[in-house]
Image (tube, rainbow, N blue to C red; front, side, top):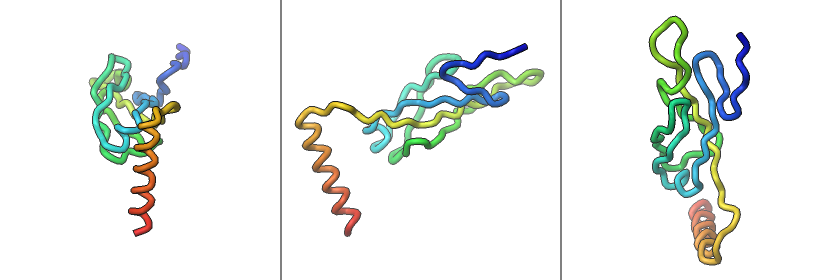
Length: 107
């Protein structure tokens, strides 16, 4: 039997790997997103300060284990969704935040 590659999931044994998009503000502040799995969407908690490329394990959301009970895991790799177009007010706020962070880093 030959398995065709899935466009969104990468399989390694019973585990699946998938990139999940996390809004910039959610990565900074923390929160929840709806992560796609092979069985549908699940709520995934994103801790404050999550970095792009960070991987989270969603237990039991992978492929069924052949000849055994249970399922593998889904390893969700974070991709940060950075907004492309900001309103003038959003840009102003981001610039203020950037100055504040730079000042704090130099202290």
